[in-house]
Picture 1 (tube, rainbow, N blue to C red):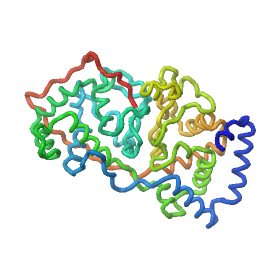
Picture 2 (cartoon, rainbow, N blue to C red):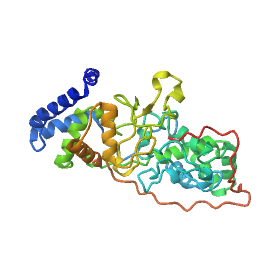
Picture 3 (cartoon, rainbow, N blue to C red):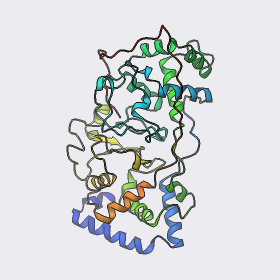
Length: 371
């Protein structure tokens, strides 16, 4: 049905879309008890609320001491060769888990090729990075540490740094009991994963709405929710994160401008080497999208309303103008949840045997692809 709809000339698609909106607006107009219940039930079937507590992690038993170790490591710039860049640098817990940059600044002031995705709620993604090349947060956390354009370090140097700090040695032993060599690159990754899994944002207006609070969304946001579902946005942005669950071509109906979708970044094609994956990306999380600008993997769009309009023309095949763009934008603001309050830790001090900072580039690094 959707393919048939997209096959229609754009003028007919838009007319049909507007016509459906008028009918649904009459039947399911916000403010009526039946309309509210129907919309709540439909939205609850498509989306799920963010829980208060993190999920279990496959292959990674989470304990309080492991989470605490992960918190320290998340904030510790000594995971980078320069000892200036931490996970927090590009995934700032005070900025929605992102960094307010088109593409992040890494080692030696290099600019990464992609916008940094938020770490908030990312534990629920089907995979990590824009192209899905990491299966989970533990695997993801190893990439930036080794990427020349980001932290420019090596696993051996990371382990040597952590092993030179007695407080870390003690924490690793407690977090990974019974292991002969608990200070390892793999355990570093698992500790960071355990901490990042706690970075949840429950309690958004949408979550309150789909769990029974009819007044949680404003009338305009309810209109936006209806339009978001009926226009096809929720076909890709569904589930607990309203995204992050599948891979889709960017430019289904028409290719965005080269500024927004750079031609030299072919997305998942680099991972799979499959022709149909050219310019395919994992759908981004829309949770907290109103506070995690700029948008798209290029980071070239700063206004949320502009991003909505680009998605309308490139993915759905019709222009979202005026009121339609406004009300979807208002709905997206209802996806901002309670932000986690994370105190910046006092990090264990270095010792005389801790490796010194390095500012030069290391040879033979990974590609450095970000996001």
